[in-house]
Image (cartoon, rainbow, N blue to C red):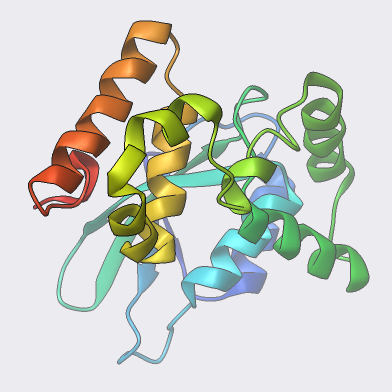
Length: 187
């Protein structure tokens, strides 16, 4: 029977579930307890364990006052690796926690270029088209928080079509001109 929600009370429970299900189960909701409870599982610990098995997280949500949920699934071989996740992998390797399944996803990412795809984004490097578009607004771009710049550069870089990329750069320029953050960062 397909599970759609799996409750975890510890990192060890996550590891045990992934050991049994990582190769045969698809997307599920990981239900974890919040900080004020006895079974709190830190977000970073959950993510570290997922990476050890070649899995990844995505959307989060609330279950009730004591629990939240996070959608987890096998990692798409075509997804890019962030610097944060690469650092978690290095830590897991140093602690002997990486599994062959997790290492296999890394090997795929290295072979298809997705392991280093975001390296320029992590460095906040600006492509020539972005530099040209920013023009006199560059200093305002520089004033954005690092997290906004990084996320915006990833949003631009992951555009699948040149027209989409151009539209996203235009969004940034128009946002800067209006004194706003780019549209993905507005609420």
